[in-house]
Amino acid sequence: ARSAREYDGVLIDFEGLGLDSFSAASVQTSFNKFLTTLKENLEGKALSVAVPPLNSSFLGYDHKFIGELSDFVVLMAYAYEDPAYPTPTAPFDRIDEAVRLETSLVSPKKIMLGIPAYGTIYRIDGDVVAVQARPAAKDSHTIVPFNDSTVHIHKHIFIPEQLCTNAEWETQDGTAYVAFMEDSASLQARLLMTKRYGIKG
Image 1 (tube, rainbow, N blue to C red):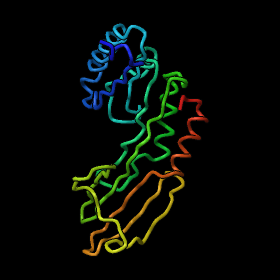
Image 2 (tube, helix red, strand yellow):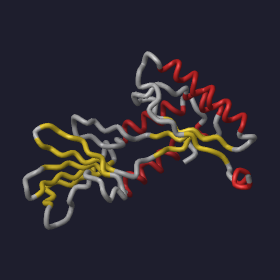
Image 3 (tube, rainbow, N blue to C red):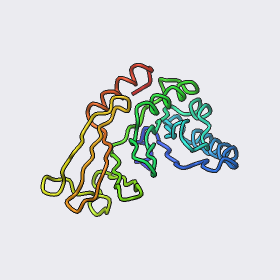
């Protein structure tokens, strides 16, 4: 088909592989076979593969093999939230570690750093409950009112060691929230990181 001739390549994003450490090795083998077969059938078109960082819980990715086989590796260096305690989505120290680990196995020129386009909101109500707020979630119950009539911000700081912005506030009904957000400052830090490690971008 004409449309099949017009694409430049594919990006494979199979998430959540290898959370069970007992089956991680067989999952890696199966995923490697799939990628090899796909690459052979792409007939010269680009193969990109999205992978979670090596400092995550997902062990079903053979980073070295994927780095050798694929044209580009998208490192999804985010989703480090702790459901039990307010933590950033993408703390700088964890991302820095993730990039260092990835460049030890994959050519830096093949690595593209994935950054989150969302933040994390925690509702503090006895137990801490993590709630992810993503853009354009129009009908989502996770959207929290955030305007002058309902919210009083009592703390809003930039956390240097985590390179993210933190805000804490309470709604009129007394519910407390903590939010971690990515902004222009944290984006600039990630861009500088790509230059420092010599990764693709």
